Amino acid sequence: MAILVVDVVTFYWLLSITQLITSSVIKNSIYIAFWVFTIGLITGIILLKSRLATMNTYRKQWLISSFYGLSVSSFVPKLIFASVVSILYFTNYVFSEKESLIIISIIGLFSGFLPFFIIVYGIFRTLYRFKIRYLKIKFEGLPKNFEGLRIIHISDLHLGSFNFRYHILDRAIKLINNVAPDFIFFTGDLVNNYAWELKGWDKVLKQLSAKKGKYAVLGNHDYGDYSKWKSLKMKKSNFELIKYFYKKIDFKLLLNEADIVEIDGEKIAILGVENWGNPPFKQYGDLQKSLKNVDNIPFKILLSHDPSHWKEEVVESTNIALTLSGHTHGMQAGIDLKNKNWSPIQYKYKHWAGLYKNHKQCLYVTRGLGWIGFPGRLGMRPEITFIELYK
Image 1 (cartoon, one colour):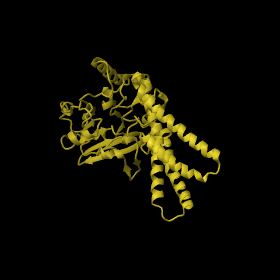
Image 2 (spheres, one colour):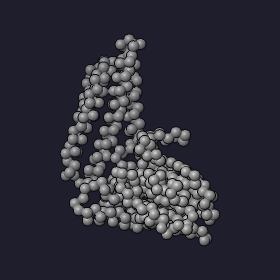
Image 3 (cartoon, one colour):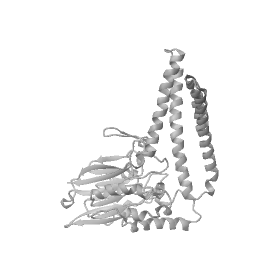
Image 4 (cartoon, helix red, strand yellow):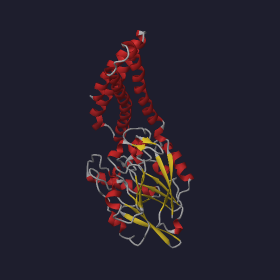
């Protein structure tokens, strides 16, 4: 309904603007193209909704993302266009009617086409423009033998969104391996929902190389909670297959547990909790369980998918030095410049992207490597984080 209302208002202003075009053929072509696209999009959405129950999950997932992209790239520019033209028209008292129409046409069309091209660019160009962010963090308690420790942090692959196009991650894997990390940490959301999304990806992700180890935790999408299952047994089987996949790619999956790494007698602890989030997200994580056997290790790194966990249970409540999280994707949209970072997601998550500090404790939230829902990234490129630790 919202799409239809915006399109009707847009077409009303389009009729006025096209008065400047003398050729009736061109005008009629514009009108026909406008309504063919609108009717086709609305019909497609209605048909998709009516047939969702009978579609196989793979096709359903692909179609939903495709229509999501089409809807956003159509609706947002038209909404902006209609709003700008309406405001200009009803607040203009300076120019003559003809001058007003020309000025409104130019500004209105620019205001509509600019967001359209930005969205299209985000879908077809930015979505897989993987970016390495380099970060150096100093800690008083870092053991001397771990000086210069090199960490790659990635998160939120959502492999189901790649539709088995394995080559897409080739560049990301090359970028990761080229920096020769000591550790690779993955902080959850390997899939959108299903274990079948992992088919063939073991050969790709097994190429990831780290000198000292590869570790992972689960995200909220890895539990199958967003799907309807015929039985609890099927859901559990799906979950077990996802967990087993980490063994196939040589990652150690930390399920409310810790691993101790030693270099020449000095030790650090790597902790991993299951997903812990504020409602409606479930709290599978048990931080105290993961801390149980590493109280005597002074320097700890925690992998926890949801950054909300840091504020609620980690900072000032533990001596964990560094927490790594994902989950937010930076909403896949925003302003992400060196001195200016903004995204609508910040009104939901206080810690949504980048480095946060509280005295001697740090949290880093990555913007994620994959995507879900909207098949694009607007000003929020997919991220590979390279962290070096110093004393």
